[in-house]
Picture: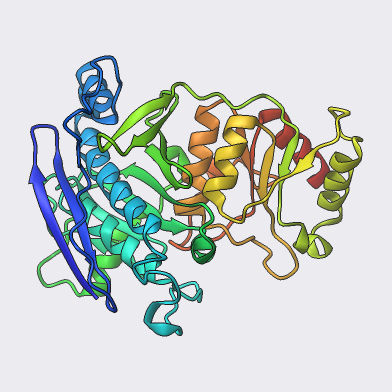
Length: 384
């Protein structure tokens, strides 16, 4: 597989556009910013670029985040384009024909690897990151290109990739931390010593996040993120190649009527959780209403629906996986930050996820998040 990246330097940030050449077919360079001559955006349209510029004017602390978000949105546009054409460009199926696994022992799809490369290349050349940690990487990556390494980026490049062959929604999850201290390593230090020192910057609780978000690739491409002052959602307008504000100041309802769990695992759940879900179905919960079940199997898609409609999303621990399957650092914590900023709640069932200090990069954690009252209710069942 060949990977090529072209970089553009604008007054706002260092941006990158990635073009992928698939190993079994020729793909022409994709024009991410095609703009028909008749398509002139209204001056009243709030694009993500304009939004970030205004935020940086209001608060100079956000100027460097503006550069990061510029690169993230370019990466999301690139991945969105790849996902939409994956079926016709031989990008579905397993990496290397099968047998390629990541550090968690999960078999990698072709787009897992490509999406990871796209995000790495777009983020590392912002010059603002000292460390990058990804689901698809064994260890955090030290960024040699950093000239002002103030931040640490963590991400799941393609959440729900098992759905990609069926054209079901997938997404990218990301979180941005501030470095605890500059990652300076002695010239004579070994690579393992360098990794160990810089790993300290990566292992932070969710309460240390300065920004997080997700990009959902579905019937439309939607980027939702927070910088600690509310949650906003932007939809990609393909006619102008820009993310446009479509979901300002998102607030999750205090209680919903939808639960989102993989009930196939219910025989291995805690008895309190089984009772909770059965009561929701029978209308015996605190709300007195019968809940509907909705489960996609892609965290981004399920959380996005929960954020808009309310209810509860959960991936609990069970007998097979006591800590569940979601990773704390780059799935549970970034999503929890978004949900809490939207007025919701997140929990392991007994503790606030945002307070947990990761012990390792790929640590897993039971996860419940969504409407405040719904998450509070499940905690009561799990504490019995």
